[in-house]
Structure formats: C-alpha cells, structure tokens
Amino acid sequence: MATRVVIVRHGQSTYNIQQIIQGRSDQSVLTDKGRADAQKVGTALSSLSFDAIYCSPLQRAKQTAETILSYLPDAPQLQPSDQLMEIDLPLWQNLQKNEVKEKFPEDYQRWKESPHEFSMVIPTAVGSKEHFPVLELYKQAEQFWQEVIPLHQGGTILIVAHNGINRCLISSAIGVTPARYHSLRQSNCCINVLNFTGGWGETVQLESFNQTSHLGETLPRRGDIDQGLRLLLVRHGETDWNRASRFQGQIDVPLNDNGRKQGQLAGEFLKDIPIDLAVSSPMLRPKETAEIILQSHPNVNLQLDDGLREISHGLWEGKLESEITQEYGELLNQWKVAPETVQMPEGENLQDVLERAMPSWNGIVKSATASGSGFQTGLVVAHDAINKVVLCDILGLSPALIWNIKQGNGAVSVIDYPQGLEKAPVLQAMNITTHLSGGVLDKTAAGAL
Image 1 (cartoon, rainbow, N blue to C red):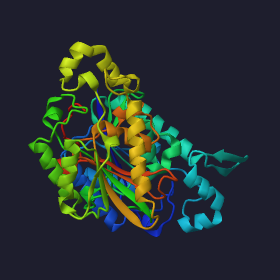
Image 2 (image 1 turned 30 degrees about the vertical axis):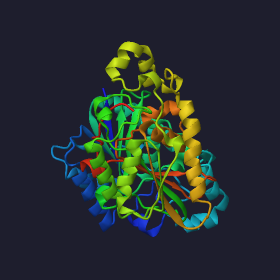
Image 3 (image 1 turned 90 degrees about the vertical axis):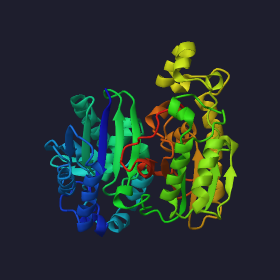
Image 4 (image 1 turned 180 degrees about the horizontal axis):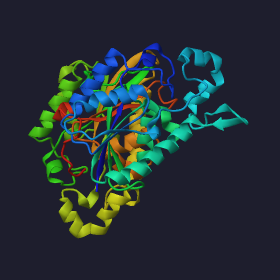
C-alpha cells in the first residue's frame, strides 16, 4: 500500500538571518517571517488529512510544526523525534559561516566538495573520536524510515525538520548517495512529497521537491550561488494519449486542449522569470508547449535539439497499456520493475536514451556558460523519459531508478549550474505543478510515456 510523506523545512530562524551555523544548537528560534511562512505552509496543507505528524525536537522546527498544526482540522498529536534532529556539527555550530571558513579552511573545502568524506575529531572523556556528520546523518535518516514507514502503510504523514536531515531523508529514500549531499537544496518552509510504494527498500517516488510557490516565491532563490546557469526543465503538456495511457514514444502526437491550457498556465507561472535561451525537443507536443510559454518572452528564439526526442517504444507505440499487457506482458512487467534491462521491441533501451539525451543537455550547459559571466536562465522542454533520465544523471542515479522521479505534464523543475560542467549541479526544485492544480500534489494525468 502506498504511503505519502510530506516533508517541510522549518521557517526562517534567527541564525539563518545572522548566517550562523545552527547544527543541533537550540538557541535559534523563528523570526516573524519564519512564523508567517509557517502559516502559509499550514494553509497550503489544510486540505490534506494526516495520519501522523513528526518533527524535530529543536525549537525552530517544533515551532514551525505547531504553527502548521493549527491549520489542520482533526490533526493527530505532534510527535517529536530525535531521529529528525539536524546534522551534528559540534565544532562549528554557533559560529558564523565566514568565521568557519577562516578558522577551518581545509575542512570547509572538504565539507563543500566531498561531504561524504568530511569528518571532525571530537574530544571525549577518554580521548577523542572521529565523527562523520553527513554519513551519520544519512544513517539516522535510514533508521527513521525503517521504524516509521511500517507504522503508517497506506497513510499520509507529515515531517517538519531541517535542511540537512531533509536532504538525507529524501536522498536515502530514492537512492541518492551522501556524496551528492550538496546537490539538493531545501528552502525555509519548502514542501516536498515522497510516495513509498511499499515498505523500506521498495521503490520510492519523489513526487515533488522544494516547492516554494505557496510562499509567494515562484521559484526557489539561488541562495549563495552568485553566478552560472539556471535551467528550467519542463515536461510537455498533456496529449489525448497521455490521458488514455497509450504509449506515444516517437509518434508525433499533438497537445490536447488541456495540454495547451497547461502550457498557458506554465507560461503564466514563468512570465516574470527572465529567460535568456530556450531549447525543445523537435516533436509537436514539447515544441508547442515551449512556444506557448515563450509568448511572454517574444525576444527568445526557440532552438530544437533532436537528442531530446522521447524514447522510442518501437512496437509498443500507439498501443494502450492493456494491449501491451496481452502481447508483451512479461516484458511490460520487467519495464515496471527493472526498466534498465528492457530493450523495446524495434525501439530503444534506457542506455540509448541516456547516450543521446545527456550530450544534448550538457551541450546546452556548455554553450550557455561559455561566456562565464553573470547569471543566465534557460528553458528546456522535453518528455517524460528524457526528463527523468536527465534528472537521474543530475542526482548521480542510474537510469534504473527512473521510476523514483515524477514528471507531470506541464511541470517545472529547476537545476542550477554555478560552475558550468566543472562541478555537480544543484537541484533547486523538481516537478512543480502548483500552477496547474493550485495545490501541493501533482494531479496531472498518470498516462503512458
């Protein structure tokens, strides 16, 4: 039975404002903005019914959870959990970030570049011990899931915690390694949604990541990123074949009326975002989606890239899932549980898709960052499988894990490249659909690729 998990980061705190490292220090409390944003989260979640609500016992998270709770009718009792405590940085907490950079330059560089290898030597009563903050936080997250998910099979739970532990909760659930700790961003009072298909160890889908539009922020702020490229990755609007669960692949199916409306809503959502460049798959459904979005950006020329075409399903194309079940039942089941092992009859496999999509994607990044100056924002519109393969690669996941990533029709994802292709990108947000449904859950068609 599927279990839905909504994860929220605490509101802005006094230490956030002062640029002080918090860790497990409990001296930091919510600011007025932090409390106001927590109220906005409560409003955004007020239509959902929760079976359990967990929070970190640190007061900035607990205050956020209590504020949200006041907006939830018939909400269960709040359950603080030590397993939701923030990352433990005992030698750094209560220090300003600049002070840490000056006092611990080599350690700070290792923390930023190799978080899974970063350690601190902590004095103890009998000497000292080596402490690996990120690795231990990752294990803490895994332990939380192993204990909590079996208690709420088929239910919906809410978690209110911190930047670091939220990253590890999400990463450990979908298979992202601790080495990619800094590739995930959590804004204050953001909303994330995970769907556990069964127990721990079974597939977990990241439905959405770092939603901030309920706070009045269309897209997450860049944070301390002061240069580079931001790419807005959009899946095309709905087609009649999406609605019917008919496999499209490389058959050039156009948008339906709802798909065009989704394109218009995405265009309205992004109209005030400066866009410097735009690239689309040449197929009708993404091309029309991109053209609709760019109506608010008339000076941007749309480029077409053949490497962004949808996966070829070969002999499956044009068939309903029920028809494929009759003819290729075993192979279809294999596609659902081990997609990386499937060679589509007279079509492609996921490695084929990876080998053409990523050079196209990386080519966009390389071309856009060639000047090396300031910020640029690009729009890329493509397909379900293409987007999933790209997002998996960004997170260091193999194509075998594409089902861990959700891409709704008309959804927007945000990826930052602070230093081009030289260093790992940062996933700022994924599968934003609030502009389509008005709510935090993805309600787009669950149809075939």
